[in-house]
Each structure stands twice: as C-alpha cells, then as structure tokens.
View (cartoon, rainbow, N blue to C red):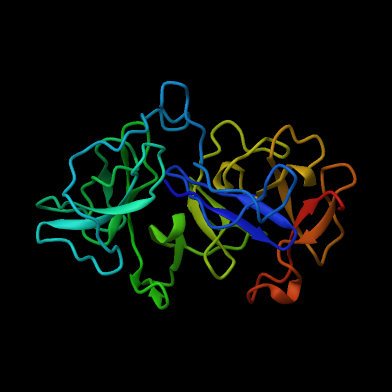
Length: 284
C-alpha cells in the first residue's frame, strides 16, 4: 500500500491507493494540516482483511533476511529490494530483499502477489512492483524510480512519486485534475514532492462521490479531492470528497456556501499548467 497525506495551502488531503499510499503531511479532525499522522488507505475489518481488496493484512510470503536500499537495489543475486509491510497494517513501510522469480514480468505486464498486497513478494522484475492488486492478488507491474532521492528519474515522461516516508518510489503518469486523462481504473490525485497530480489506482469502489467520507486520496472519484472535513458541509468524518474547480471560472460548487480556493498556498505557488486548479471549500 501507499499511504500519502498532503497539505497544500489551507487544504489537506489524506491519501492512499489500493494498494494505498501515505505521504508526509495531513490534517487532524480540526483541519490542521500539521498534526495528523499517516494511516492506511482503507480501514481494515475486524478480521484483519482490507475492506477493498478482501485480502488479509499480513505480510505473507518468505523474504530474505536483511534490510536493503530500494534506490541502490543492493540485494544478493537472485533477489530484489522491495517495499514491504513490517507490521501487518497493509502499508509499505520499510524495504527488504525478496526472491526474484526465474522469468520475471516486465513493467505493464500482468503480475501476481503472494500474501497481502504489501508483502513485497511478487513476480515482477527488479525495480518493479506489482501494483493495483485485486482480490485475486493480481495487478500490473509498475516501475520504481531510478537515481537517488535527490535526483529521481523515470522513463517515458512518467513522474517519480515518493511516499510512505521514502519507502515507496513509483513511476506514475502526471495528470490535470480539471481535465483528467487517466486510464480506466485510475484517478487523478495529488502526489509527488513537486505538488503535481498523478494517475493512481481508483480505490473508491461504490463510494467516492461528493460529500462521502474519505481517508485516502484515491478513494474519491475523478474530479474530486479528499480534503479536511471542516471544509465540506455535512461531512461526517475527518475528511470528505469535494470537487475540483477552475479558479478562472464562476464557481459551481455543490456544497452550500462553498467557494473555489486554490489547492496551493496561492496560484503563483502552483507548478506550471496547474495555476487554475482549485477545490470547493467552506470559507474559514
């Protein structure tokens, strides 16, 4: 899982994907983006199974003793350094050498994970991870970033998204939330250290509409963002889905009294091409 929390300007979005994603900043129940801690993208059931995937949150699979560096890929021959879940909460929170299969799958190939989606035991090649895992433990191989934390690179115009305290480094497609062009099964969510938007796995299921409670960024439908519940009228929880809006157009916000505010400290703080991106919020 990825677990990502964001705080851009006065807004905050808890983030996550199936697998889910946590980042470095988020909001508490009062909307303070500085005080909340990362949590897993979907709430486990009492049995320990993830409500979205139906897979028990256990690490599963057999690993090779010893931590490793996912940037350096410094594992012994026949193994690869993988993000893994160390405490059975479904979140990739450390790295470990895991077995490399004889004929590994390549990026974009279908793949399979043993154990939980965050076990790190899959049939993808070195520098790739099985992502978007479903109930049958099947997903697609996604490339991991190359280079270093200070100089991360990805091929083919993809963007390096670093999350989970630096334990998860994925190459993903950038997108514009005002005109999302993500492939089927993906949503355009906040992500990346450069405060851009990225296509990632849609974990909304039957929920994700305006006003629905959310705990992770990828549990809202396309065109919506998971923000502090104090900014969404009638929100029953810490965070709820609210609409993206265009700062250059007349606000068409659904929520009573909501206005369109920049997702950044100011439009000038936005990366090129995203200056007009806002989200509907209740005035503070």
